Length: 148
Image 1 (cartoon, rainbow, N blue to C red):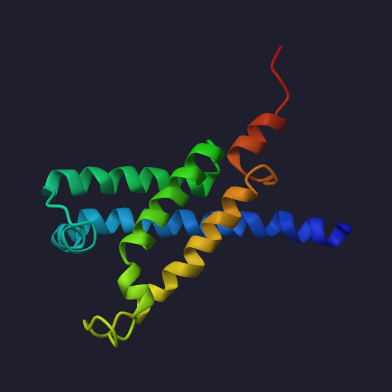
Image 2 (cartoon, rainbow, N blue to C red):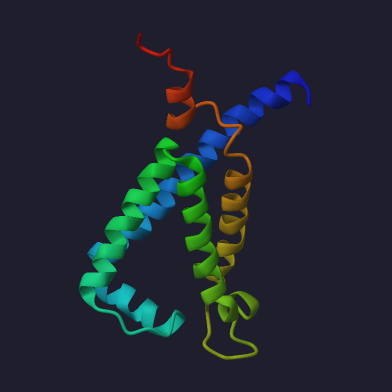
C-alpha cells in the first residue's frame, strides 16, 4: 500500500464509523418517537408481538450502540453488535430485497429496502477495519501516555 492509500484509508474509516453510528442512533430514536410503527415492523418482519416498553428499551439500546460506534468505543463489541443488528434486519426483509417492486410476492413499492445491501456492506467494512482506525476513542486512549 502506498503512503497516500494509507492516509486516505485512515480518513475513510472515521467517516464510515460516523455515518453508520448516526444511522443506528436515528433508528433508535425512531423506536422512541414512532413506537407504533416499530411495533408494526416487529409484527411484520420479525413475526413477533412485543410491547411498547420493550420497543422503547431497544430504542435506547440502539441509540447507545450508535453512539458507541460514532465514538469508536469498544470497537470489536460495538461494531460487531452493529453488524449483527443490521444483518438480522436485512435478513428479515429478504422478500422486499429480492422482490422490491412486488412482481413475485406482491406488496408493491418496497425498493427502498435495496439500501440495506450497501449499509450491510459498510458494516462489514467497518468491522473488518476496526483495528486500523486511529481516530476512534479506543485508539486515542491506547496512545495516551500512562500517568505515573
